[in-house]
Length: 425
Image (cartoon, rainbow, N blue to C red):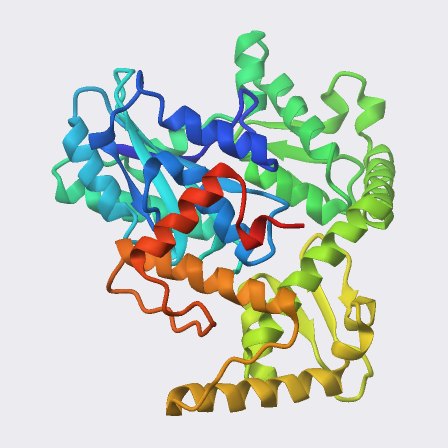
């Protein structure tokens, strides 16, 4: 039996590795000799597992994405005594063959320091091949769990039934209620409290309660709100402690306060500039490779953006769920991101693609910064090709003839912290 989950803290919140220091520490943690050993390490697009941090940073610098979330941390744990380290490693290798991991640098390590064998997966958030950042919806995580279950069946390991999976999941509020010896009514009130902290309207509130396992009856013609748990036990809001805080009017007031607070956060200079900056880089990268408007929109859709490109309007709008919309007029330099300029760029990309396919393309770059960026991309992909000879990276730069030995020399220099183009300011 194997359980796949995102690494969480003691409060069951996903750990966000959003600094280089956190990224380095978690990589060092999974590779501790007291927990694993070289024969139980592996991964994808990593040449030297002792140099994972630097190789992942090389990718980030190549694509100009060195901020934000740095890595994703998944854990796959097995029932005590059901498997052995070698089998768990074999399952890890097959687990990484899932389409979701394509193009992402990953290092894993099987840990044997507890009675439950478990594998830690550290995933670089920037894709080696495309430069796109890691995105994973809830259904995609469930798909990975299902794939893990399939592998377990192949190896004769047990798999949790849906009923047991649901039965084993306990919310933080359930745990608090059990620890404090509270009744199911208090447990319901604690769950309502959690929902009231973040809900911005009635529909949002009902949805959050549903995710915690409650049905909510909130009708306009009724004075009270009824909550029913998974054991079919019901309680009205008038029976909560301090019921005046849970009237319809009080909860609606709380929704409005939450909505204002979230709106304020979006308008806050730091937060708003972050989404604007992230959107700019994603649009810029999509513009570099798209050969038409439809392909451009499709690339951004895949990254979670809703793109509104209406020929009747002057501007193009990009929006991610939970964030403010950003228009192309917010980008700099503005003349490069007008509709007309982007359409010309698509034509240029199409022409370049045709020249590459015909063998006539020559990469002549006037700007030294762009030349350095192109060289770095080629160096990175060439280096990775040493350990992945079947992969094909058709980048064209003036260092295309570097040998494998020369590339290793570049990596050695990078570790010393001198003499490498991409490390210069």
